[in-house]
Length: 334
Image (tube, rainbow, N blue to C red; front, side):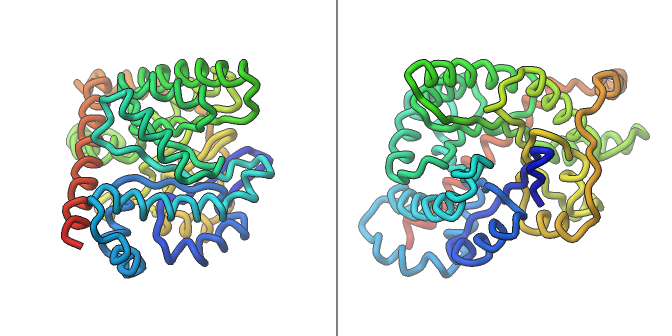
């Protein structure tokens, strides 16, 4: 349920070949979503478990595992981009994101070269290349945007990462504009629920409110992005699905971060729950005083957010690497 008046967008965090042919198109036509995202874990799950890829894999015999993955992934991304092209042409986003090889997270040149190659293979303007928010990722973001390739800065956990993304994106966009370029955009993907899954057991022991840290951190970064006044860069809230053990409504993180000029990307079940629920209330932006008071309280209880963010970043890269490697092993056997 996108809201163009508010400039709130809902993207689907899911890709699967058969799904793209019908249900995905229906969600776009009904105005439920206006974009989509993918990541190594999503592709690993789809390619290794869905029968939709079996015939295609037979035709790819003789290729390396990574070549097989790229052939499958780029075809899916291209089909998703085509389905979203009408939304993109109307100026209301319509992007699909594809991540570079997670093992390139600390390799600027490798990231840029792979991103350019994949973008050229897909050959659709409404593809965003996902680049991890690492020291090597920031110059890659700048270079890709200067080339006219839209960027999704992923695995953002801290305000410091977000600021570095903003600076890199502005430099790249300014360079692109100076060469006569017309449209290139960026999103800063702030991961949300992982904070709560890490910290809530500790907060419960201390008698502090749970399921709030990810929201307050995301709200703080959202305020920073908004204050930057760069319309072509938006905050995207990622990792917004809930786990059963959290005991939260499926659409909890969408409603808790609903506001203007932002995007929420969510799994299919979360999108369905949000659609079925009541009209959301606008809760962003949150007052800076409220945000600061929350984190001061955490600090008084010995919780250092910079350390939490660092650990989550390391775990995020490792998880994407593990998913990618496991998928490549399975593709080697297929």
